[in-house]
Image 1 (cartoon, one colour):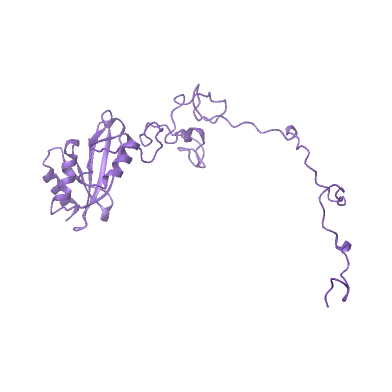
Image 2 (cartoon, rainbow, N blue to C red):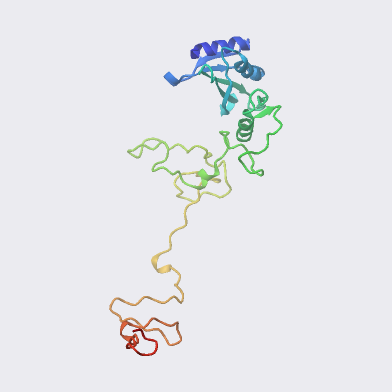
Length: 266
């Protein structure tokens, strides 16, 4: 079945005016896309599985997309091992009440994916009894894949690229854009930004602290009691009698015994 036919068929089975069919990108690899309201989420997945023309018996993956004020898109991809076609189902939940029905009873393989999506985006899956931490430690606070989540490592460490985002090859003319996950100046952190910190997080709060100045060459601490290396023209010094035993020099080796002496070999 063509991708367009897969989408139309699923919309007919859902029988909801809010359901919309479409086609994804990818040219020859395009998939049917169907957007359904949250109340019909489980019904849409069950219809895709049980209908003989669709027969999407393989659960591929489930995740979410943060659409900021518009809410979250919960997305899943199903595949038919019989008819060799796929369908991408989506539903949008509000940000303040991010919850949708669990589909573990329809596709048991969705259990792991719903746990990860709940942990990373904070979306609840009603009916899933095992939404416990999966990838993060239990004491972790927040949901790292939400766009408002501050990536502290981007604040504490400079952008790894050769140039900051927004800087052209010519080196001027365009205002630099903050890297993803870095808050605006004064929105994060408790250490005042020192003067001349490169403009990252300038303000009374937040930003990357400047690196400490290097010590001048004459201001380094003494090395201590470590022995100094002799100069190139100085003769090597022999160890003191109290030092560890040294290997004898080449000319100080004892002579080999003559044949026939005690301990010698014939």
